[in-house]
Image (cartoon, rainbow, N blue to C red; front, side, top):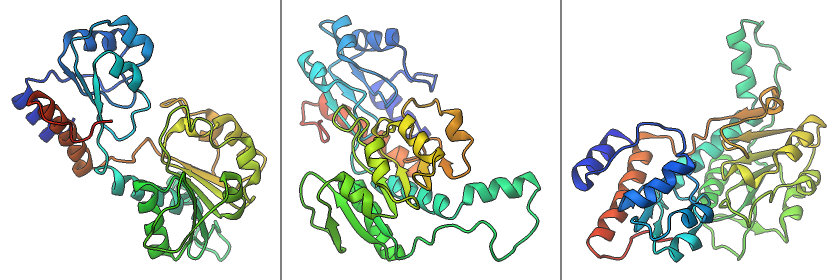
Amino acid sequence: MTEAVTARAVSEFSAEIRAATTPMTRAEIVASLQDYDLVVPTLGDLFTAEVFAAAPNPRCRLLANFGVGYNHIDVAAAQAAGVAVSNTPGAVTDATADIALTLMLMTARRAGEGERLVRSGAWQGWHPTQMLGMHLTGKRLGVVGLGRIGDAIARRAHFGFGMEIAYVARSPKATTYPAERAADLRALAATVDVLVLAVPGGDDTRHLINADVLAAMKPSALLINIARGEVVDEAALIAALETGQIAGAGLDVYEFEPKVPEALRAMEQVTLLPHLGTATEEVRSAMGHMALDNLAAHLTGRDLPNRV
């Protein structure tokens, strides 16, 4: 946690702060349910149904998730065990949308490739056809999932770059910009220059972007993922990039994170970031305080501000 959140957690809740930044092991997760009243997990900590079965009658009463996504927690199993679950929506919206635009710009304008060229010492100077990329202004953006984050991405793209917006979502959305709702995902993929993913993770969206969707995309199109890694069939994406089925990809998340396939790491047309979506001091502190607010509400018998 950030310094401010750590200080509050220790002073207000007598919290024990785990030293390692790697995901908890299964044994640690079972122990956390048995030995602690409240737990603040994050995305790598897998609170599965099997884990809850291994910790019957848990002491823990609340998993105050540090993050908006909670697909690493089996919420039904938690609730059946008498454990509430909360998350941190809202705090992550703008920072995650900023990273989506970062990936769009870096991939379209070949910024990562260009930086590597300069750092290598092989750059021989400017010339008129050097590293030509995609001009984002006026292009068509497809947003998969027009919730808080998807909407923030679309607003930036439309008002900042004059991009046309199309989307798929479970229901029509009211927007402050012109936006066309596509009939389905494949139809959306076929008509856009950039396809950005902003859906929750979980079984419903696993491999939502598969070989069929990638085949529908334009050969000049880019795929941007700031959602969850498992939303994309990584093997299918690699095949689409290797064959030129799509022009490039910008990824902040990976199917088997933190493992990133060598095939992706070797591709110049792919921008790879280490899950930076919410990585600012202000946002991570806001997320931490939101998680602690849920703890405080639980301990005083109030409704959880962000119950899942």
